Image (tube, rainbow, N blue to C red; front, side, top):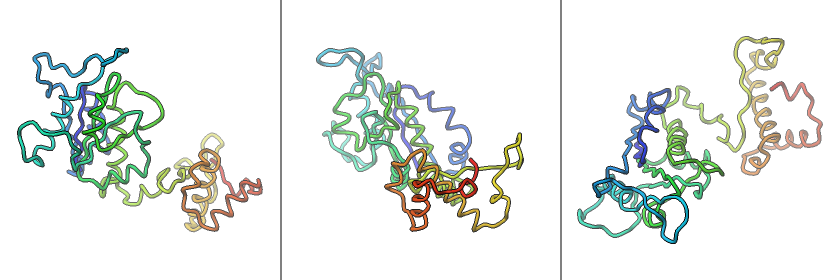
Length: 263
């Protein structure tokens, strides 16, 4: 999979791509991240990429010309004309990272993982010229209901979340199936050695060797955590009759501490 990232600050993206899973995915040829400096596409001698907003107001707005030029350069192989081109929506997903976009979720990450190439546009300052949003971007994504100084961190979040869903990237092919939000549920708690740390012990079921009981415990813990911390997610979860009965017992306060286990 290839990501093309448009940014005014390429160095902000460098270090995370050289560490851990992203680095290994790139070295294995499963991921390619090409960072494009939007300033390189500004045609004036000072490489100006922002200007004052029409109508007044504080802050600066990113100009449309360099952003369009950068994207059209990326898509040049799909273009027939080399002269000035009309504004239109290309076939390739072109995502503007903005607080106004749709919320980025695990479902969206899976949706994006189905593509072979994605363009990410990192906004800055007060935002981008509206014509980028209207006539260039095919999608808009936000990583949360807050405002950052730019789209570089959201771009890295999207790249990381999508990359770990690609076949062969993680050591365990089934690892993503148990992730929080994978099935609209939060993940169960994890333990490792030592079995007793400062008087706090690992739940006995995890030491029992009974895989069926371990699976049941993990499912119940996942349900419990979601019920306690993010009950809004349960409406979208795939719940069996057993799951629903367990949640009903939680709601009635009838679930024993032994059954719930330790966090």
